[in-house]
Length: 112
Image (cartoon, rainbow, N blue to C red):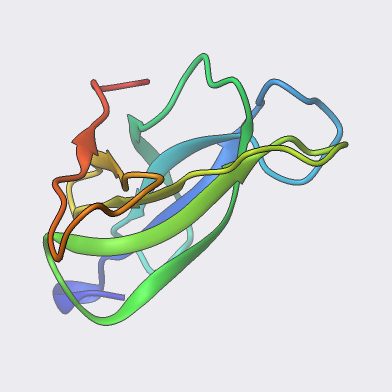
């Protein structure tokens, strides 16, 4: 919940590559009437190889780090990646390997 009664949901609400499983493609939904109605503001991922799941909101979040989640194959062991997004739904993928004290996350193109 945000100031002014705005509710923001970042979740895998859209169908993903492994149907009928946990997760899917990420979307940003907003309610301005305390949850009575919702509008999809942004399709955050599409065409993903793996499902996205287990999104978590950051407590007392900075607008640049609003939620974090992972991806993976829903039915078998697989590699996975960690993602985060900002308040506006821009998505970033963390590097699989950190080679120094700091690494730059890759921004996913809108809807990817």
